[in-house]
Length: 469
Image (cartoon, rainbow, N blue to C red; front, top):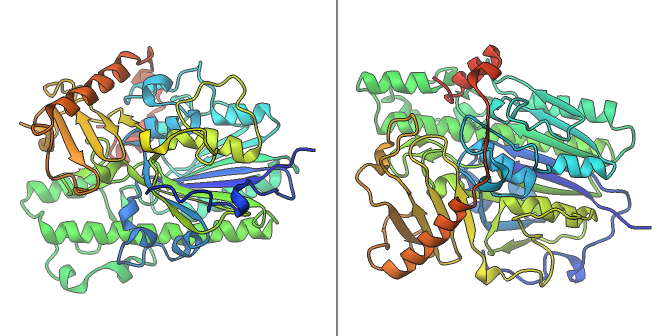
């Protein structure tokens, strides 16, 4: 009889390989029970604001301890800088140019097979609980393959505790001893930032004396817009926002601790694999802006990724990996064949199946501003703006104004992406642009929906998150 693994994938939005140290004897361990899979996406989480990636503040004590006995990927990238195309890639194993959920008006194509559909066809109970991001809802076709599909609203406070509680409740009520695939999406690190029990711990008292943001119950885009218009937005206010952001991470970390505790109570912890990561990051004025979806700099697409579970040992992996790799990787760990599926992602732990040194990753699909695409290799990253004058219904983002169409950065010596090497290496730049041009030429026909298809209440919730006017 084939042995299966229980796999927990908690995604919060990879370094050179360390060989086969990630598993005892270099082989996949046997699990005592048939496999389950849980994906938890923590929206808008920066990797460099977590302790095990070197952050100095205590934002993630639970995850940091978990990382010590897990495989941590230091060079993991998202296929897009905002939720819909990134999560689409996670759930299909395809880049945005193939799954079609590219811009605000696009939906996931019916023709693609989602992870939920594939696992449901293999006998899994499939469960989806989303803490408030309606960009990956029913209208956008993300329900595909889920038996139970719930979206809560982040209106008056943080929701991770309620999301975890509802997920565990539904799991207990509906699973009926079947293998399960659960998807949980946490929105508490995404603006608006609400006060938590950890906020005062992260607020700088000296900065609070001069900041125009006087420790409100929440910080949202309209508040920041008002401060800018009044000329009262500077470094102290930015510091306050980062303090709220970090406190939100600490709150989510506490809820992850609760989630793992509940899995233990249900008897699932000892034979559960887990992956912690993010759909994308957040710019905190690294290149002059705030929010996400407007650039392809590393603060938006270089994401945290941790995998652990039975037989996996604590280690760091430096190879380039992408969230398109999640689909084939979890199938391999679960012992489920991918059948005839043609995926862009690679099974990360499959020995000799791919050459990490030759890996090239893509990231594209903008939320606002002109379309861009990035080619990421172990040594370089090239960002290409096909038409810098294109507005796509949005104001051209300030960091792009007057910049060249193509930028190249050294990923090793210039991790903050300050020095454009494209003028110095025109031949390498041209080769990269041709690859990106080919990527665009292979874009599928997208499927769009109109605003009339969106429930007015859903539109109001998107507006509250800063996604709609």
